[in-house]
Length: 299
Image (tube, rainbow, N blue to C red; front, top):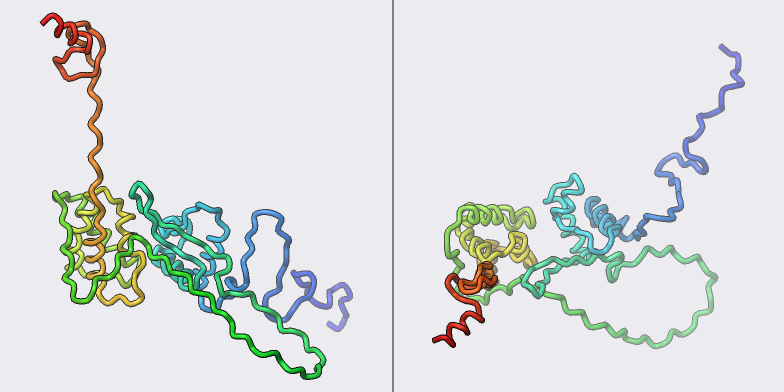
């Protein structure tokens, strides 16, 4: 038992080459030459953001311009729920890493624009402390100059966000569809019930859903896409929301889009002229131009 084993190592070898610490992480670095994204520590080590929000911000910054970063697109890509992704997006908006606003295209279509900031204004990287320097003779400091504060930039207001009604103003009447359609009614009811997935404050009662469903049906009757209706109702919500049903009713009444113009009538079908058998587009029984001229001269 006391025979030394000279072939046994003195200690177990470390799996990580180089310096080894007793506790904490040890980084194994690698140099990336392609397909990499630079992320600042102000984001990776943010103390107020959740891990979901930090990971979502890194993913968005790694995407090319024009990539879809909506709640449905991200929930289809990752295992997190739509509610959790929507909460993370709102965190990034609160801390100025993301800005979303609604824009109406010339054709009337409403789209959401998203701006992703690699470093928001006012966020700086952590600066290491300066080394201790020898004490120099005290010199009189120059007179302080009052800093000139820049004028704050105007905050853009999304077009789809209607201003709240003035106090004492009677509410605008809710729109009604011209004709009842069960499928459209079902879509409108489901859209209102699911608004709480975008913002937990938009939790409506069953009575409020039934009251607002005809107004949403009127939007759908005018060929507004359900996603456009949802954005018009959820974009630019105030910080304090006491009566969500009242705000939704105000937006449904004041932001109702106009009906689309009627499509042009289809062209008349080709048929043969009764006088010369020439192919023409004309109502049944009407002659071509040459035959009408011949008939007029004969008369």
